[in-house]
Image (cartoon, rainbow, N blue to C red; front, side, top):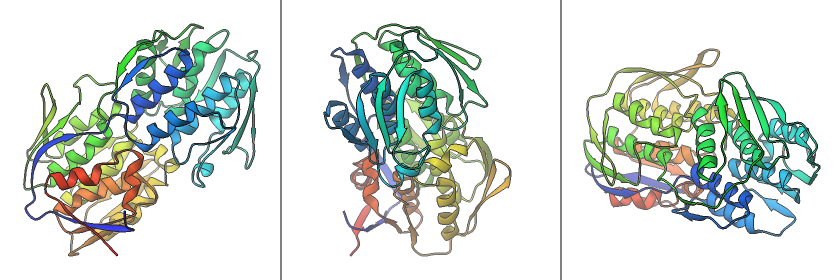
Amino acid sequence: MSQSITLKHPTGILEGKIKLPASKSEANRALIIAALSGKESELHNLSEANDTQLLQRLLKSDAETIDAEDAGTVMRFLTAYYAVTGQQKVLTGTARMCQRPIKVLVEALQELGANIEYLGEEGYPPLRMKGFSGNGKNRLKVRSDISSQYISALLMVAPLLPEGLTLELEGKIGSRPYIEMTLSLMEHFGVSANFEGNTITVAHQQYKAASFHVESDWSASSYWYSLVALAKEADITLLGLREKSFQGDSAIVNIMYRLGVHTSFTEEGVKLTKKEHEKYLALDFADCPDLAQTIVALCAGLGITVEMTGLESLRIKETDRIQALQIEVLGMNSSLQEISPGVFRLEPGILTKEELSFRTYQDHRMAMAFAPLALLAPVEIQEPSVVRKSYPRYWEDLEKVGFEIKENE
């Protein structure tokens, strides 16, 4: 795909059925748990996202050096997996991945008996995994306000520890639904845990082989909700989503109800139609930070003021997502400012440009969050191939509902 594409929609009317990619959050957890079980489990509807395909390959690899590329879950989950299974590996990633902190997880694993050393700057990949003694602690205190992936990584390996593991989570728990997803999947594969208050206890036990069908991705659905909110008319069905979901990003249903989209659950998935939207919102993204970019881009497009909290983890994602959003909304005459510690306000402006252009910062969610604005004016998306990380068919699916996409020279 070229360095940039331009999207436009001649009618602004959307109609169709879309098969969303499978959830990489569910798929990646299921892959790690199945590998830890040592048994053959049947995993159905695994995600076509690059992160999941990459994890599948790496789990089968005999190579000494393992490249997690730009995949945060792959880096964090494999760090715990290789540590507790005692494998001798060097674990690295892209230049950006080697700037993303991993010290909280590494120190926790070291306390549990893992021998891990940094090959570059302390606290960051690349890592050398040098075995596991298994005579460490069975109770840890872990900061819970940075990334839930650290906690999920520790929980998945906890049953293999000789005395199990008790985790005390310190501070406000970020992305709690992702921790609950991990525990639900562990239970599906035969491991029980107890989560009370800020303490999670997992006894030493064995995973069992099981069959598991991965749900469609609620994070990916958010871009379609945005499209419906911006469209003149819309009747979109998203296939494979469940009303009772493990995924925290199913919060999009209630958020988007306020932003002009009504959800009806059907046997196929969800049917999206338009309704009136509110003019001002206050939202907490602590449990669903991956939805923030979609909401910022949409509110700038609809002229809605929104105050947001729970964005702390966005600083350490594929890019500094807060900074990227602050820069890109300027092109829409909007501003995103931190008005008090941890509280951000989007003040929308009036769109005056005949064509909008957005940079993606090597971040798949930047591309997919801003693309729906092509329903308001032609939109140029730079580095469009970044969507391969989680939703490789995104541009093809937009063409199915009438978008014209031109590759630029």
